[in-house]
Length: 381
Ligand code: AMP
Image 1 (cartoon, protein in one colour):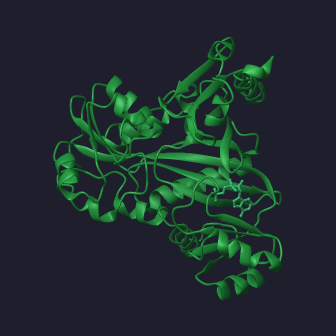
Image 2: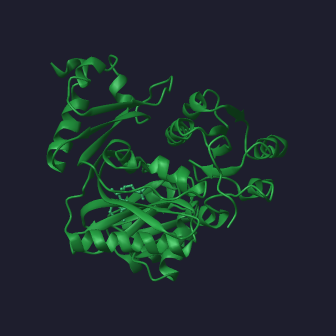
C-alpha cells in the first residue's frame, strides 16, 4: 500500500461548490494544503483553498499544471471528464477511481449496473425514441417517471407520465434525449446512507438519514431516520455492497426509496459527500468531510458514532426575497449551527447554506430546524 498522504501535503479537489468548501475547511484545519480545480470564478471552495485553478477540465495544460501540484485527487462533483483524469501523473492517486464516476454520471449506466449486480431498483426501461417510450409505458405501467440519462439533477429533466396522453409532453420535456422510464414508487419515505471506505477496504457508515424533498430539491434531513431496524439494516447492507463492488476509496452516498410495501430500492448513487450528510458535522464523532479526507489520504477511518440526534434544513435563495434573511432570529435557537456558502447571488432554488439543529430526539430536531429556518423570513412576525 502506498504511503499515506499527511498534513503538509496537498489535496487536490475537483469542483468548487459547497461540498468542496466544507472538505477544504476540514483539510485546512488538519494542516493540509488545498488546491481546487473549478470552472467557476470566486467559488465557495476557493475561499478555503491555498490555490485555485479556474479552468474547464477540457483545458489540458491547466489540468496537467493543477495535477502536478497535488499529492492526491478527490472530488466534490461527479461530472469530471474521463479524458482529463488521464492527465493526472501516475504517482498521484485518484480517489475514488474513474469507474465509479463513469457509472454515476449517467442514470442508464447506474440503473443497469445496479440491475446487473442484483441490487433492487424501481422497475425501469431504457428509452431512446418516442416509439420506445410508448412501448416502455406499456411495459412499466403508469404512473411512471421519465428521466434524462445525463445532466438532470434536483428534478430537472424529469416528467411524470400518468397515462398514455402524457407521452408526447414527457418526450418533449426530456428534449428527446436518451432517458430511463421508471415506475413511480408509492413512497413511505426516502433515506440515504453514506459509506466511507478506506484504502484497506474497511468501511464506516452514516445513516440511514431520512430525507424530505420540496420541488425535487432536498429540504430537510433527519438522523436517525424514523424507519424500522429491518429497513435501516437493508439500506446499510446495500450501500456497503455498492462501495465494495466499486472497490471504492472515499465516500459514496446511496439514496433510497422506501416503498409502502417495505421494499428498499436504490434511487441514485453519488461518489462524494452528500447534502444529506451535512448534519454529520455537528452530530457525529467524525464528519463526512473529515472521513472523505481520511479515506483519500490513506489514513484510519474516524468513528461514525452519532453523538446526538440532528436535523438539517437547506437554505435556498428563495429566503433572500423579498427581504434579506433575519440571521439574528435564527441564532436565538439553541444548538443551532448556521452554514453559509458565500455565494454572492441568491436565486430561487439555489443552495445558499444550511442550518443544523441538534436535540435529544429526531422529532424535536426536525421541528426546531423548520422553525429556525422559518424565523429567517422578515414577515415571520
Ligand atoms: P431524482 O432526481 O431521481 O432523485 O428524483 C427527485 C425526487 O423525485 C426524488 O427524491 C423523489 O421524491 C421523486 N421521484 C423520483 N423518481 C421517483 C419514482 N420512481 N417514484 C417516486 N418518486 C420519485
